Image (tube, rainbow, N blue to C red):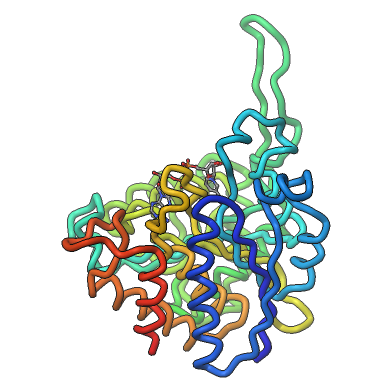
Length: 361
Ligand code: NAD
């Protein structure tokens, strides 16, 4: 298969973890005989330095041409007080908008080797393996009217939670498609006992479900879901929800896995004419200025994002499994970075990348 991938290392540890993710991407492409065409672009603080803008037109062009984009992280402390359009983080919004990605996927896996770093009791978290699918472009973060009006006791803040049938349908279909390649179970999360948007959400999900007779569907109210993620995380396979619920619950899911450096993410849009799904893949963490340039950042979240790219953009499930199994093998071997508190000397970012390639074979 021909894989056209854009690499956007970004700032801080983004460049370090992306280097290792690319090492793994190239290794897998060689092993499984895919033709890998890599391009590289500027995004974030480095793009401001070199071009004056966090999301240059040249990057936009490259992103539109690529099948999938692998990003590191953006953000530099020197821009903390800059105006919004001159901040590195603006680049992220720009690329998400250009690609039209509407679902954010966060796989949450409890690796056996990291079970002690989870805040939950071992027997609760062991075996957890879910994907949280968050709608990314609608809901209360974008609805109008919004704003603060009036003064004194009548001063009022307003936000509007709104969803169309089309927005709900496309993200629901994505959840069902994902479940088909997993344990075939979708849990839809809403607050339909109170909110009309949630009533529409549930109605549309129920209407979409019969097209996927091989996938089981259940519904949870968002407050109950928050409890079940802690009480019984193993019950979940694919969990789909609107934007704000997903923002909150995906962070709750994230702590189950141990370290922030472990977590991959994928933002997906529609299918391209080539058949690939448009996708933006990045570790969940930021540019970590406190450890940047020291070769000690954990690259496993970025490497996990490569596995997600194989799975979601290219539907190369064997390649994705090879990367995920290698990550698990490296965790079990103890050759891990300092954030995972290894028993012996911590490995460097580069050594972890090399270890993953060795484990892939
Ligand atoms: P951060 O995720 O960069 O760091 C939080 C803490 O986790 C730090 O102590 C850091 O050392 C540690 N950490 C993060 N990733 C790690 C890894 N791979 N290995 C080991 N330790 C790791 O969050 P922050 O400090 O709040 O933000 C720093 C900058 O990153 C800011 O400019 C922020 O805006 C930006 N940011 C960018 C993204 C993104 O690009 N998607 C996401 C979050 C934050």
